[in-house]
Image 1 (cartoon, one colour):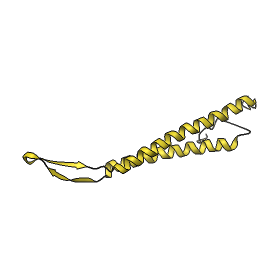
Image 2: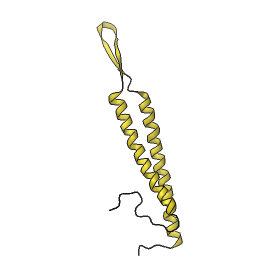
Image 3: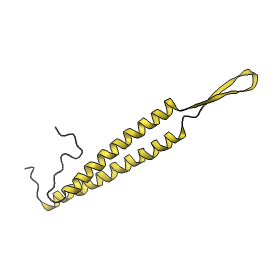
Image 4: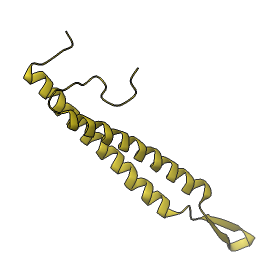
Amino acid sequence: MKFYPFSNIQTNNLGLLLFAARLIAICGCLAIVVSLLSAGYGFFFGKTTEPTQLENGLMILGADHSPGFYAFAGVTFSFGIVAFVVSGILAALISMENKFTGKNDTQ
């Protein structure tokens, strides 16, 4: 069982492009994992501000939750999605090349 992306696609002429598509897909997956971990870290370990005194003796505790972590998570998540789209387009091009050249060895 093969665990790398696009394991069913075969090509004779575009081997480097297939390798690039697989590498980009793996990078996209890692970017999404890093973004989720970053957002979780910012939420659970983000700093909280000091309690603020309100009227009638009430106090409120505001949380900062590190907006920098959320910005980083948003950018890396977007990068991961774009990487998956680019990788899919490359895989589709490789599949079309294999189909149109007629060199299909799966018979």
